[in-house]
Amino acid sequence: MPEILPGIHLVEGVDPEPDFTTHVYLVKDKGASWTLIDTGLPGASTAILAYLAKIHVEPTSVKKILITHLHRDHTGSLKVMIEKTHARSFAHWIEAAYIALDPIYDGPGSPPAEPVAVDEAFKDGDPIDAAGGLIAYHTPGHTPGHASFYQPERKLLFSGDLFFVDGATPSLTPPEFTHHIATAKISARRMGRLSVDSLLSYHGGPILKNAGGAVRTLTQSL
Image (cartoon, rainbow, N blue to C red; front, side, top):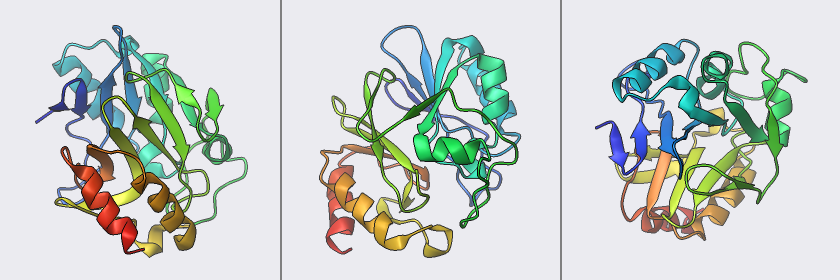
């Protein structure tokens, strides 16, 4: 099921093993271009490029790469994908420093394997001209500069690792992988106030319809 919603593709072949999902999203922009959200582990670029070829999208049609946070399973193929697509890369300003390994991140989870200079560092609430118009939300907790991307017209939330999804049930990221649990709860509550139809999580899921109710049920218990 590569195209999970109109213009939204779940890139095939990037999972390192069957029980560890890593959802790299390829999203159509309003024009002829595309946006990639996260890039998977080192080596995932091979699967991403193969998928682009499969759906007849030239790598250079990917104009933006949005990164939710620094962890290696999200940034591992960032450098290669920038080289292959010539896309501009985006991350929250805190996370941009960690992705550049300046300083090296010492929290839970693996830091990037190699430094990458992000082209554009955004802040909370900034609009991003991608995927039909996104709002970047700073959703810290899992990492200090974790970000989620919201498409208000279609009520889509690309949540990175703010939520894990088991079937149709979201939860917070496991504590052992979370920088600050209390802050993650605050971020989740904030996203729970948005009108969300589709929750496009990175691990598990996604929940394609009526996701808002599931998110609110979770956040009311936090």
